[in-house]
Amino acid sequence: MDRLKWFQEAKYGLFIHWGIYAIPGGEWAGKPSPHGSEWIMRNMRIPLAEYRKLAERFHPQQFDPYFYVRNAKKWGMKYLVFTAKHHDGFAMFDTKVSDYSVMNTPYGKDIVKQFADACEAEGLTFCLYYSQMQDWEDPNGDGNNWDFDPKQKDFKTYFYNKCLPQVRELLTNYGKIGLMWFDTPYDMPKELCKELARTVRACQPDCLINGRIGYGLGDYRQAADNAIPVLSKADAWETPMTMNSSWGYIKRDKSSKSPSTVIENLVRVVGKGGNLLLNLGPDENGLSPTVCTDALDRVGAWLEQYGESIFGTTNIPNFPYLLPWGELTYNETDEVLYFHVKKYPEFPYRVLLTGLETKVKSVNLMKDGTPLKYSQSYEPARDEHRLYVFLPEICPDAEDTVVAVSLEGKATAQTV
Image 1 (tube, rainbow, N blue to C red):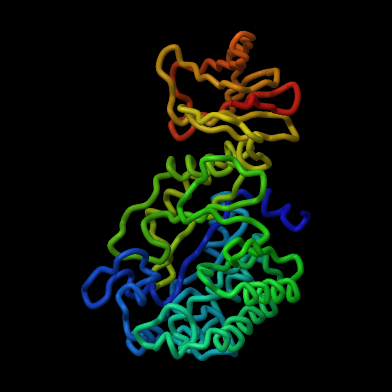
Image 2: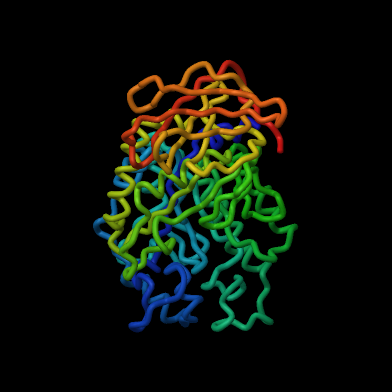
């Protein structure tokens, strides 16, 4: 559908998880919280009265939305998804529905509006995350069973008094929204999920809805967190992935995915026909961990050189084999197949692609255009097509050696 066109062309987006959970940073009363820092309230069963006090300390004077928006563009990302409200129920925007928001903190400024304005100014598609079922602050929301008796909850009261009105606010007060990213629908009643979808459509007909609205009501499918499907998918889909071990900022985690790992994951996702939505978690001051941004700087530099092999590409439909040396992406319009060689071969420095039926026209190293030798054959007795590409003795790019294979028609693959 036309509404999906921008999303399927985007390939790569920035996810930002930020809220008052950045203040404890994965620790409470001197103890580390298991799992993601944004789940600390539930995982450690922190009383709401105590957790709410974090709002009194939220004052990120170093926060600059343009830092994230401009860097997202530099890193090659095409859309930004910001967490307007996570499971803890705290709104990072000016909501009239609840006093539990960023407006009632020492900072006192609408974070969502700042991101919306920065994205509009910089030409980046702005999108919003909203936790529609879980809300640990609302007595009728799902998830907080230590402060509130689950037998006394009336989920519809929460849905109609907080969830639906806040979604309307987000879709009414912040300009054009590219997509609404819902999460953890669990056993939310289907009729309420349908009403939520109708509300999005009524407010902004062109706004996409992600798969986690539930019951197949979304415009595209969500892979599991940090997971890449084995098989290619023809329909639009997306993998949400973190740069480290948590979605929200976590003090004890100084690690980050390496540039090489990010590139590998991006290529694998795009090679299966999907989008990669990669997450950063700013700290309580609004700053992103330097180890993450340094890595993304290098990925952005790689995309400046090799972006042609990512943007405008997709998967080869029904390609049957996993490749021991890397991954494929394919530009159907230009009829170019890209080899992403992650595991560089030893002597005789060649890689094998089995199953490509289409005749090859030329093969070039993408880094500098150097023509490469290749051998294409067909064995009738075994009914097997083979393409060997011979690479330079010295690896041209340790991150990912990209080879452009020009074809004489649309790429077709044998079935197994």
